[in-house]
Amino acid sequence: MVVITLQRNKCIGCNYCVELAPEQFRMSKKDGKSVLLKATDKKGFHTLKSPDHSIAEASEAAAKACPVKIISVKEI
Image (cartoon, rainbow, N blue to C red; front, side):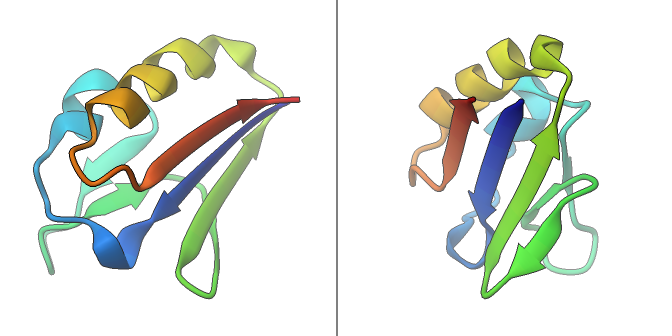
């Protein structure tokens, strides 16, 4: 299981996550912030749980590239 978490309210809209993991992230046309696709929102933390381990590498690259460090990726 791969768990990706995004603190969307802290996003600065740099677009690195979309460039590195386009299957998981999109930029919102409304506010210019990142959106974690197919995620559930709980108090500003958007979380995606997926059994597909192939998404982990791109998501980890996005987490490392994020200048405000609001993306976390865990494999469990």
